[in-house]
Length: 201
Image 1 (cartoon, one colour):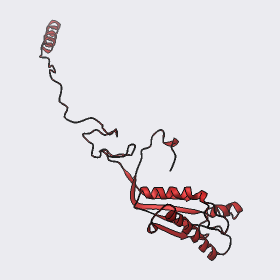
Image 2: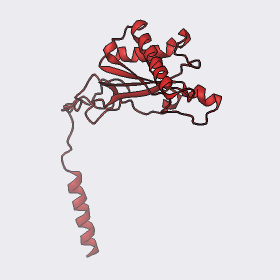
Image 3: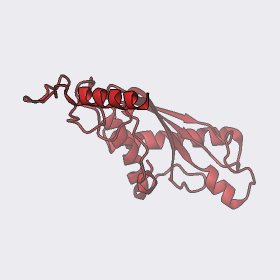
Image 4: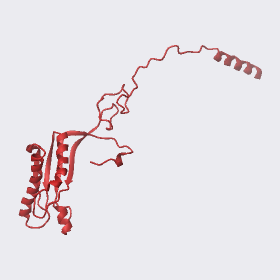
């Protein structure tokens, strides 16, 4: 019986080895384009958006994701007590807002004026409004932004950032905030290992 099984095994192995061997005389035709021409990680066969910004977050079809513009930042403008004069040394900070709004023409900005809690409330309403107006004036007169894209609001001392009423607190509370919003969108950029070393805008 063992001899029969051995002979049968040899016969089966011999049959397997005698089968025809398929050879590739011609190269296999590639059906889909597997290149990634815009180096976004999505092959051409699946690519639907070829003009996404390099480094943007993308979906499975290579289309960049966007986020609406809603930027809020404090302008580091130091006002003297009971003054709304803007020293030209601070124009550079206002220029950052102007440049951003020029790059995104469908945006508008609200300039908020704030005061320290010294003097009457009514006086500070006027003062904070004048501070906001002073910034919008620089945006129009120095940087050419259209007035209908600018709104100025004075909040008196209703929104302090420091309630200690020290001299430092008064200085901190005399400030201007710029809030830029709009229908424009900006690319949502991917996080990568060097992100922490880049300048945060």
